[in-house]
Length: 205
Ligand code: ITT
Image 1 (cartoon, rainbow, N blue to C red):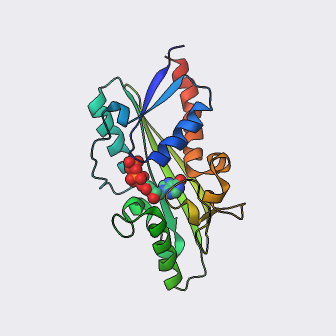
Image 2: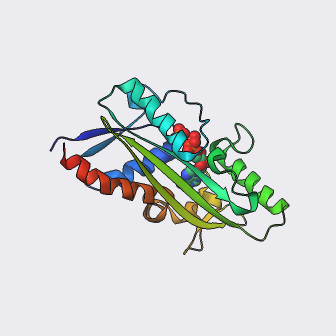
Image 3: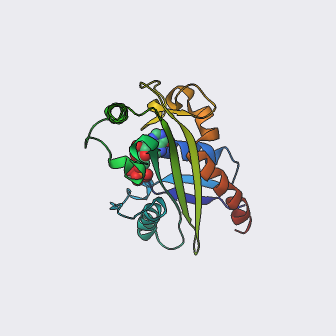
């Protein structure tokens, strides 16, 4: 069976590693290629009102530079914190001090929640993926509920992983590591739905 090149429309290295690891473990005739291998991720102003819209903007931008036959996958994700009224949500990538490291941004978010003297520490990661094949668009969604840790813990993963404790666990994503995170995360759930769809799509090739 012919292998399909699937371009991942993202400049986030952490996302790429997770998506590649999960898709390659699925034994599908798919090879995940980074946007770098396609000349770099085009600049996209993520100004859509929701995750779907932003994921679509990224997918279409890369597809436009690759041509109509290319298969492109993009995702938009975010952390929704109850104590912040659901923020940062779709604005997660741009939340906190501009140009600050992920660790500083984690600390800033915890401080903001603490300032509100909120006892509710519930939060969730959301991920929406858009797959563009030759002619079709497919949408997949995943969500992972949890609580915010009191302090940053763990060194694995990326972004807000050191402060997010998924439900059913006592440690953060950054402590749990990829083996556990890739079974339960918002991205894993969206990808599981996508992989179900890919089984039938790749058999049609
Ligand atoms: P691309 O748009 O290039 O894909 P990005 O990092 O800007 O990369 P988003 O706009 O989707 O991606 O922003 C999502 C942000 O949410 C991301 O930068 C992280 O701060 C956070 N995030 C999403 N998934 C996460 C995860 O699994 N672990 C930790 N933080 C995550």
